[in-house]
Image 1 (cartoon, one colour):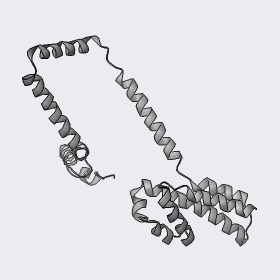
Image 2: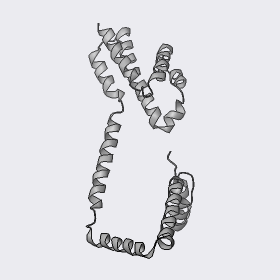
Image 3: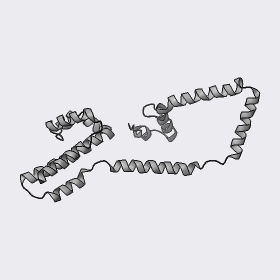
Image 4: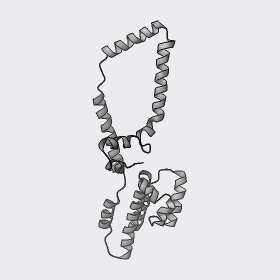
Length: 199
């Protein structure tokens, strides 16, 4: 969850603002890593004490020689190159996931072009197909955005907003017990509906 710091930074001097933001607990880096940092410190102290007090002298000398050999003879790994490759892969994966979010805009334009007419039946067909696309988008964004999740905490709220009919909700609830990720289901409904109306 994103925590806004703009109110803290807006008032006061530069040094005061930095410390004010650094000591915040809610949404801070410290809150995320304190357990890992504590475990690391405990292991570091334990290994250091074991090396200093419990190991025999010949073992300490061997480890010191090994450390000197490794630090002087092994070429350092090209960390910037590997890091840039990793960041590129993460960015490509993130962008691909972003592009997989269903967009109802293009579908609405194609539907309008494919199903012409100003009569009530054509209008209802277009509205139903686009409603299914928007429903799929809402179901997807419920898993991503906290604002959408607060607006539609349950499927009942999605139904009350008019994105889903009662019989569609019942069908969706049955499917939800079998499959966890079913945001695609309204798109299947739209395809089936379009095929039925065409025939």
